[in-house]
Amino acid sequence: MDFDFSEDQQALRDAVARFVEKDYGFERRTQIARAGGFDRSAWEGLASLGLTALAVPEAHGGLGFGAVEAMVVMEELGRGLVLEPIAQGALIAPALLSHAPAALQEAWLPRIAGGEALVVLAHQEAKSRYRLDRVDTRAVDGRLTGVKSLVPAGDVADAFIVPARLEDGIALYLVERSAPGVNTRAYSLYDGSRAAEVHLDNTPAQLIVGADQGLTLLELAADIGIAAQAAEAVGVMETYLAMTVDYLNTRKQFDVAISSFQALRHRTADVKMQLELARSMSYYATLRLGDAPAVRRRALSQAKVQLGQSMRFVGQQCTQLHGGIGVTDEYAGSHYFKRLTVMEMQWGDTLHHLGEVSARMQDTAGVFA
Image (tube, rainbow, N blue to C red; front, side, top):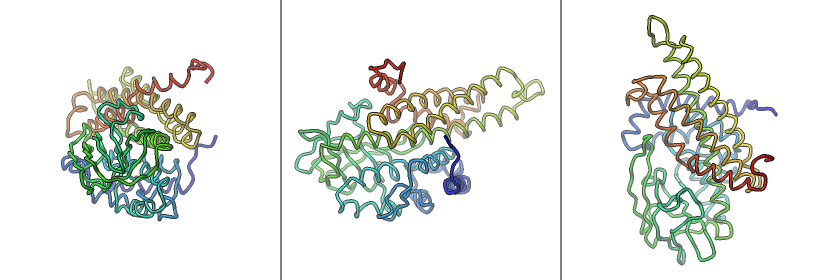
């Protein structure tokens, strides 16, 4: 199988890498994190690169790129610890809105492509515990009542895609943040990114898809999120490993660089192995997004299990190899560790996805998968 990227994909990677290096350095990221974890000018900068148009169909002013291009972009954004929710606003939202009625598509997809509108998925609830089919938010006559938690940039987003329960299943709705009955409470997550609690009280909403498709599309959204996060995690881990190797080559004990210590070299090799395992599963997750739902869901859970294990191992080992400086807020490495820690818990933690993989392998017990 050919894993080389095309010239266009490499050019896209280079453009994002230049943006991260020139316009999203560690100092600017720190300022954004301290200001709440989202910066509208940074979002506009990402839009100027065409990233908000990445997955929007060409008919609505987008680029119509596929999963591999999204993977390339997310990996480079991971290297810079970019806080703005590109995966949510530029990958997940267009994928879901592409199934909406034509009028709704025409109203929102061009605005998403141009970076004028940020639309995010608001699906998590306090009792769901990563289960997508556990939805307490209710829809009655096109009005929603409920509470959604950990909504990315929820207090600054222009609209939300909200799963809500009907009598016969789960439907997806679009809710504008300015709609009556919407209240948000913002907070920062451990890694500096921005999230919010979103309260809906008899809030008017527009139907995207009914109960016959709602859960199926919600599962697709989660899988897109996992694949995007896997690519981002590879970028985070690769950069943190490079920082660690540079530190080991610089730091001296007994008048020699500590990179010459055999025990530390072995630990670094183990970190590199976990990084490559994560990279291979990131590719696997991306390439499986187009499969049938049952196959796709199992594959993405398998990828999340490996990514969870790799993120935890790489983050902890690289931090320990740095010693005391690795946990100081002024040093960039600690923020890479924080980002890996948060990502391991998002879209279902490792234990949750281990259960998902197990549940889908009962016929073979995992022996002849």
